[in-house]
Length: 508
Image 1 (tube, one colour):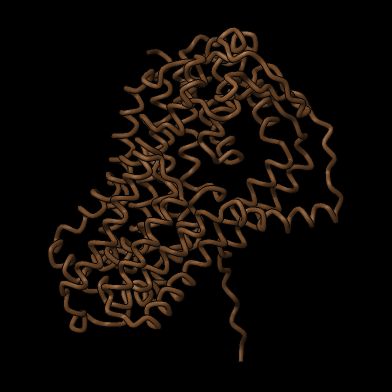
Image 2: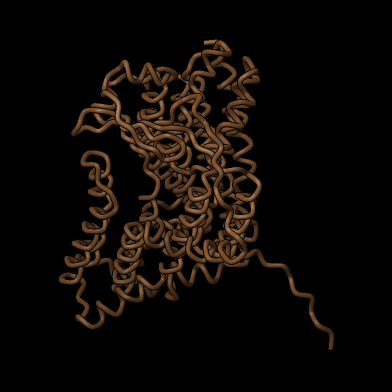
């Protein structure tokens, strides 16, 4: 009897993030801590709080003269109306800090504390994910999803590719206008079964949803959390450079749609071509259930009403985020209200309803843990105070470049910064006061910096483990290596397009 050689299997999302957490901790011992001074406007006192790199605070008059004194080329009105609401870095104030590096025991403690703190800081998102999982469990139990998918499949017979076009386009539109990103986690439980029932694999559903969000936020046009706050902080109008950003949005979205459809149709013709073919039966059992086409429950009024109420929750959620500034507490409250409504119309007994809700929530507990772990990586970087040091090094490195070389290198600079600072608004207020003046030095428009920031950080979001990708993959039980294999050619195409458009913007 011979022993079979064990095949390497890619580690789970938890292990990937823990390895990154460990790598970042090691990195903090080689990158010195440092910080820029910052200023923040106080709306109640109508003055600025200026924080030195060593943490010392002082106040300054809330006037344009104060901004000029600190070389922050931003209109005071943008601070007063809340357009710039985070602390803004003050140029030429970087100082290296003599921060004590923890010993081995301290490092172990920090490593263990980071995920716990990450859980605490992301509890609002996790609450939403668990409530959503509970609702999905209940709706699945009633057979509403199975009946609805069967009816939809009949209507889309021969037109399944339109699912990709519609979903990707709508989510990209949400991304470019108001930064639709974390909220897309809600779409996987309802859309993955629909894509699979149409003959595609689960990877196509991830692509339609996640690529739509990624290309939309990457090619932000009026997104207040990225391009608007970045432009305001850089001292220009967010409409500067809008033409090329629209070109990126349209071309980028079309490329993502074409790329996804090409893969999807290949899988539909020959399921063995799927990158996740080895998981086919397991995923079909999980998302489509065990029943065959002849056993699909009747799509009666009760099931239609449940799906309508469930879908209405997403419409209200998107409107609430865009128009009313909802955060995850409000979104969770909305779906909790939907839970109570479904309890009355599902036809399930009280015990069955609660049991299915708890079981559905437990199915997404792994996703919640991934979110907490990813936040732990960011916490380590914040505590080590290395982000400002990287910004200082990178800004010094590009200050003597010019033209297309400058715009291209800036694109890659923001790719790197996008990993260490995954928050679009956080990166904007930290980097723009430092990077925007470099455009004046090398003789290009400041909107070139805005586009490089937008597209560099945006393309990094396609794969950065500190962002949403691992949580999204965990929703669909797909490993990170499968996603990398699928998405890297697309990233190369989108990246080349970004470099070309940045080169064009230099001469406009």
